Length: 282
Image 1 (cartoon, rainbow, N blue to C red):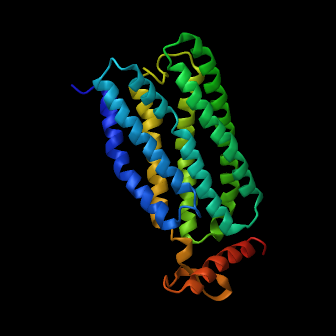
Image 2 (image 1 turned 90 degrees about the vertical axis):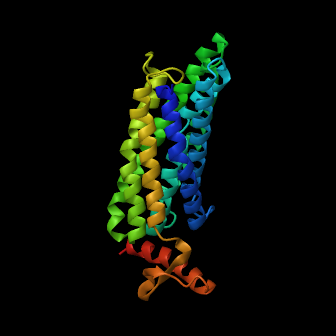
């Protein structure tokens, strides 16, 4: 009989196997280098697929402690790639409005603590899940430090997104959809962050990465992650690729450029950025 935890892992595979294909397509469509946001979404989907597969193996082989530990660790590190994806998407929106913006600098700076928090979460999770009790205390310390960094990153991201809301009227329709997707995702990321903080700071069996309450994990982490993934994927499919935008009078983006004309494509991208930069200065 399939347990509740194994059922969730099966559902995760059913959701993220097609999602990773969609994320890879969106990343290819927008450019793997130009827009980093969707690349992190591909990484997140890969982590969820790996975690779901190992979780199923753990459920069917309960004597293997390694499977259970890695399944718990992989399920606990989903916050970082989602935050990094949100930063990348928000950066694209801000670039349309203002070049060399302070907001973009802030987003670049908070990449560092976000990556550091991810490392601390992995190290802490490994120690907490270890069979050696002497490592548990230090593991909890690492996890708490990582949780605090995630909280600071989220607050900074929230502040940048709130300021960027003022520019929504000056954005083309594709960038508006990306900004709306990021803004809509923030409350769900907050719930996901709250779940992580509770697992790290609450001495409660309900919030435990190894054997906590499965229903709570589903409602505060799994569902939130999936909703954020959908928001970002839909935004990526709806927004036009920058290299395919053309410009008219006053360098205003009009629509798809001729993909067979390199000069038109180059002119479109450069003109779009210049136009939206000037719009904020008027």
